[in-house]
Image 1: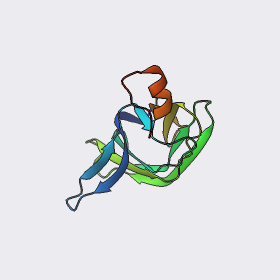
Image 2: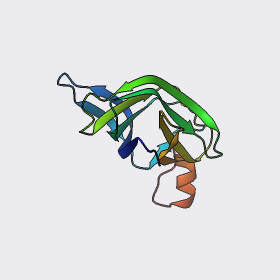
Image 3: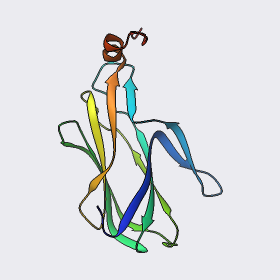
Length: 143
């Protein structure tokens, strides 16, 4: 567990945008499963919103990693310096990931590092519609 911040919540979605008033707007929110309608591989864009309780105001090096079911790093987003103007309150981090390689079904893991080695903060399962239709009769096959 990170010693200088605490992750309170993670939301995986299609996109995160900032509203005029400075509030995040989450579009296409996922649970812990993503169903791919087409065959693999795919390279979707994703938004990740991380609610953090920071223990300090500035983190010089921050990054978000995506690991595939084999634990291989498939995407890295280095954000550099991250600032929390009011560390006495929770702050939100927004990550917009482009072309994330999803090459296989299975559990993918998100890792966050802020001034410390990255740690697991969230995982999600990837299925294709065809594989779900095989094991779950009520799921319609693609097409």
